[in-house]
Length: 351
Image 1 (tube, rainbow, N blue to C red):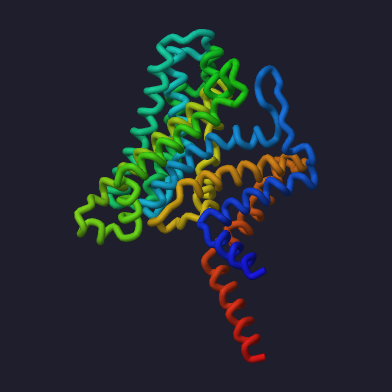
Image 2: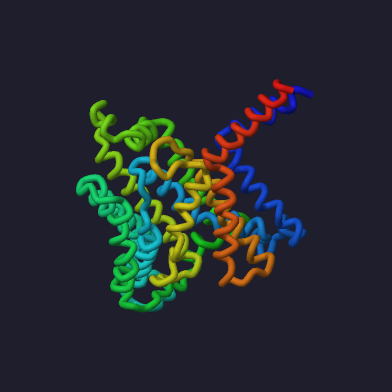
C-alpha cells in the first residue's frame, strides 16, 4: 500500500504531469455533455470528429507556441506581433501567387516562390523585432507592439485593401488534406515544425544557450555567449514560425484576409507557453509543455462550442478555466500545499 503514494509522488513530480493532467481533464469533461466527443468517422476519405477538429485546429497555435517558447525563454518577454505577422505572410504569398490580381483560378507564379516569400516575410518581421529587443534594448512588449499595430496595415497595403482569393485546389491542400491521406495536412506541418525544433535544440547547443541567456544574460556574456545574438535568433525563428502558421491559415480559407488571419492568436500562443508550465520570466523551458498547452487551449474552445456556448461568451468561460489551470501549476500553490502537508505531519507526531 505504501507503494501507491510513492508512485503518485513520482508521477506528480514530472514537469509535464500538470499540463498533461489539465489537457486530459478538459478532454474528459466533454463526455458529460457530448458523449460522442471522441467518436471519429471518415467522410470523403478524411477523418472527422470533435477530437480530430481539436488536433487539426490547434496546428496553427502549436506552430506559434514553438516560436513563442524560444522568445520567452531567451528574452523573458513575449512577441505580441505573431498574429499580425501571420497576416503579412498570408498576404505576401497570395499576392505573389495571384500576380497582383484579386481572384485567380490558377497560379500566376510558382507555388514554391510564394511559400518561400511568405517564410521570408515572417523571418524579416522576426529580425525586425529581434533587432529592437536585442540591439536597441527595447522592452519586448513595446518592441513587438509596433508590428502588432502596423502588421495588418502592411498586409492591407500588399493586398490593396481587398481579400485576395487563390481558387486553386493544390493551394487548399496545406490547410485541408491531401487526396488519399485521411489525416489533415496541418497536423503534419505542426508535427514537422515541432520535431525539427526539438532536434535543433537537443542536438546543438542552442537550447542550452537560450536557457543560459534567459536565466542571466549578463552572466552569459561573461561566459562568452553572445546573448544579443541568441535573442535575435529567437525572434527571427519566432517570425519564421508565424510565417508558416500564416501559410496554413491562408490555405484553410484559400485567401489572404488581412483582418482575420491570426486574429488574437498571439494571446493564445502566450497562454500556451504559460499553460505548458514555462516561466514567462525566461530561462528553463519545455517545448513539449507549450505544445500540450496549445492543444489544451484548442480543446477548451472546441469543448465550449460543443456545449452550445455562444461565441460572445466563450472568452469569459475560457478565461475562468485558464485562471484555474494556471493557478494549479503555480509555484506558490505548490509551496502552500507542502506547508499544509508539513503541518499535518507535525500534528500527527504531537498526537
